[in-house]
Image (cartoon, rainbow, N blue to C red; front, side, top):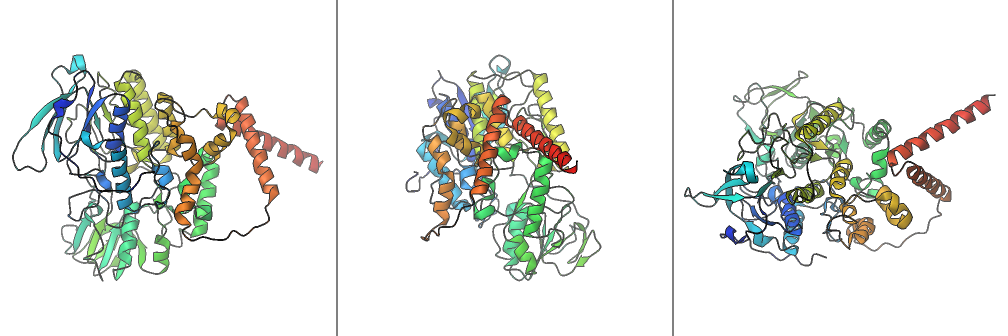
Length: 578
């Protein structure tokens, strides 16, 4: 589908004024995944746009660079934690021969191919540093913004200010790393770095290393170092629930979470999921048991961590209490001596250095953004943030969905509610997060992938109509509800639908199999369990009927089924005991 990935040299655009004056003029900050899809959506809506990118390439944080401080936040060995079918843009599937979980180089190749396919490169101004974004002198009347830039690769202070009708900020939230504060950090004589500056294991060979944190970066770094260090210690405050990338049968774990499961009460799913995770390995016996339930923290993905622990290469430790010159004392009173290095995987703090706090104020990773996009207090909806969220799933399709909505707001094909209504929505989301997640800077922008995608899709008009689909195309409805919630579902209808969406939905599972089954295997016929198949069909048809009676509300339909099952059970129990 994508063809051969031939290198394309990015070029610098020096004549922004070529943008025609009779169309809306939009500036996009950053050429990562959010910036690229924002540009593409602008073009789809007939909006003229330009991307300002400080590097000389696309890809954002996914671009590995040898030099510390350059490129993105990935290390040499980074593998993405979301499968290709769940992370693709809705109208541009990832080739079926690509690995289900891609290396960072493959992710970059996909972004580059996306940019070529939709002819985006000519709208990108590389090597351009954004200094400041301020309301234009006529903002109160027009909603326009002034953007001050300079060449990022120039030693001169050559600044240019250009006025735009609107701005989309796509600079991401993984650029300013967060360092912890432990007693004695200034006395420790070993090496101390943040994972932002970690590239690979070179320089750590045969060392005794402490990795601080229990997120995805922490476990990845710890597992990689454990193959080369004499000992690795993984220090964590709260522990974590550790998921494998593989679900039942070896399929990607995120292919198991679908709309149907999303409708089941979380209390039931929570117990089932925790038992399943502890069946893989007992988190308490491995020193990783968290103090929170499985839905109260962002999931940690690692296939290797329990293996490295059972081999003794990694030892879980409590939080750090204090550091000596070479020794580290932990909060449980234990001490590890002769430590050579510490890698802090303690997350990031996001902000907007080029924006005045009066425009968007960020405090402790919290800021007021309607749907995590629009500052509600601004007079004109002409400043939008894209990708400033932490989804339980892939960020690429979420950014794309936000961009589709934003461009329609810019074009006045969609409107925003009042400031009071937007603030009420913001506060509602904060209360909801506080009721679910442990208090942590990383959970201030947490979202549920399926629910948030549907929420924005409703604003656009591209959410699939499952009730209608049950009668017109039941096979597709089944795949959308009980199969993985893949991005092409949101191109079946609404603005800018894609003719290949249905086929992409149907091919999702086969694309995973094609990538993993690289040796031909003769199929062995096994006797099928028709009883299980019959029960599944009975339940599916009951769900469809109950949903139809509830006007398309799947959650309400499932609740009716649950009540009917419990009523039948109670009547049967009464009959038996009489």
